[in-house]
Length: 151
Image 1 (cartoon, rainbow, N blue to C red):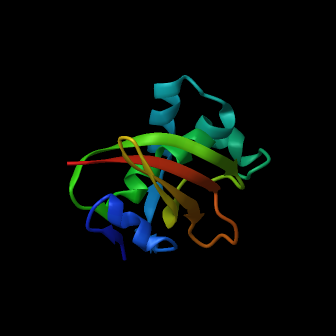
Image 2: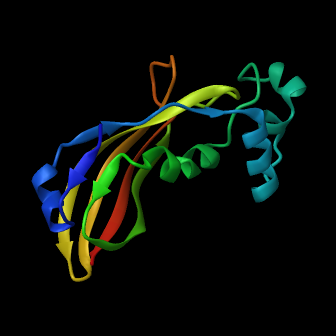
């Protein structure tokens, strides 16, 4: 399932369109690599033995690691033809609702919320949830913004 538009301008015709991606594992190796890249080696992320006795019952992914997975989780879910480029424009809202335990799987569920013409193209807003397999609540919810520049 994808959100597909023939051009950036056509995106406005698809408001409310939804797509859900494939599951991706967030293993301890990925968590440790993120800790190395960011310098955030807090024990709740990187010390499985200590984290097992901690508040989450085991190591958890960094919230910002979960957020950083969005480009990959959204890959292929949104297809816009006739683009020169797309640019991450930022976030309007972001909430971390629950932690992602190490070795769990996550996926993105996305809905096109807005598509507004701007001088350089179309700025789209997407409501995104990063779901955790088997969990009642998502790990995070965000409104992401993307600028689509036509070819």
